Amino acid sequence: MATPSTPEQQKALAVIAGSQLLVLTLWFSASAVAPSLEIEWGLTSGQATWLTLAVQIGFVIGALVSATLNLADIVNARTLFLTSALIAALANASLILLGDNPFIEAVALRLVVGVALAGVYPSGLKVMAGWFKVRRGMALGVLVGALTVGSATPHLVRGLGLEWQAVIAVSSVLAALGGVLLWLTVKDGPYEAPAAVFSIRLVGQVLKNRGVRLSTYGYLGHMWELYAMWTWTAAFLVASAEYSGISTGWVPTATFAVIAIGGVGSWAAGKAADAVGKERIAGLAMIISGSCAMLTPLVFGLSMWLVIPVFLVWGFTVIADSAQFSALVTDTADERYRGTALTLQTAVGFLLTLVTIRGVPWIADQVGWRWSFLWLAIGPALGVVAMIKLRNARANGEISQPV
Image (cartoon, rainbow, N blue to C red; front, side, top):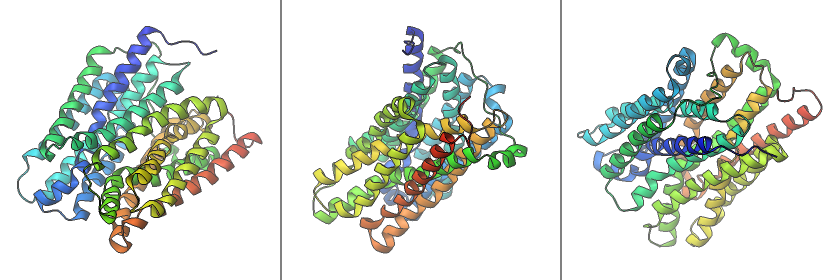
C-alpha cells in the first residue's frame, strides 16, 4: 500500500506543478498567435515556424550548458527556477516592443526563451524530487502534466479573442508569477536529490548500453510526433474547417483542449506504469497516438464533432509516455552516467523535433494539410518496436533491472 502524502508534500506538489504550468505558457505563446504575426510583421509561414524552432534550439543549448556546468548544484534549484522564469518572461514580453520587419530580433528573443526554459523544467523537477521519494513517479507524472497544460494555455488565451500583444503579455506575466510563486512558497524538500551531471567523456559508455539505446530510440519516436503535433494542430483544424466551409472561431479553444488533455494522460500513464510496466504503457500510448496520426487524412474536412474526438484521443496519448522514457533510462543506465544519458536523450530528442516541426508545413505546402500529419506515425511505430525489444531483453535478463 502506498504511503499517503503529507500535507507539506501535497502543498509542494500543487505549488511546483502550478508554477511549472504558469512558466511553460511561454513555449507556444508565439505559435498561438503566428497567423497574426505573419500579417503584422510580414512573415512567411516558414519564418513564423522559426518562432517555435528557436525555442527548441534554445532549450537544447540551455540543457547542455546547464548540465555541463552542473548549475543545479552550483545554484539553489528554487533560485535557478525563479531566475530562469524571469529571464524567459522578459525575453518573451520584449516581442511586443519590436518594430517593423523584426524577424531576426524575434527569433533571437525566442532563442533566449528556450535557453531560459532549460533552467526551469530541470530545476522544477529537482525541487519536486526533493519532496517525494516513495511516490516520485506520481509526482513526475503530475509535473509533465503541468508542462502540457501550460504549453496549451496560450491557445486558450487566444480563444478569448485577444490581440496577439495581449496573448504575449499575459503569458509573460503568468511566467513571472510562476517563478515568484515557487520561490516564495516552497522550500527545499527533505529528499533533495543530486543534479544530473553531463560529461562528454561518458557519451561512449552511454551509447554502449543497450537498455539506454532502446529507451532513447523509444523517446525519439515519441519526440518525432509530439512537438510537431502540438505546434500544428491549430493550423490543421483551421484548414479542415475551411475545407468543409464552417467557421474557425472554435479552433483556439479546441487546440487548448487537445493539448491540455495530455496533462490527464501523463498522470494516468504514470500511475499505470507502476502497475503494468513502463515499456507496456509507453508502447500502448504510441500505438494509439500513431493510429490517430494515421486517421487524420480520413477525418480532414469532416464535421468538427468527428475531427475533435480523434484529436482529443491523440492529445491524451501523445504525451502520456513522455515521463516513462526518462524513467527507463534511469532504470537501465549505470549510476555513473545516468546524468549524461538523460541529458543526451533530451538533447537529441529536441533536436529531432526541428525536422518534424519544419516538415509538417512543408508537406502541407506540397500536398495539402490533409496529408501533413500522416508521416508522424513513423516515429511511434519505430518507438513501439524499441519498447518490445527492451521489454523482452529485460525479461530475459539481458538488461539489468531497476536498482
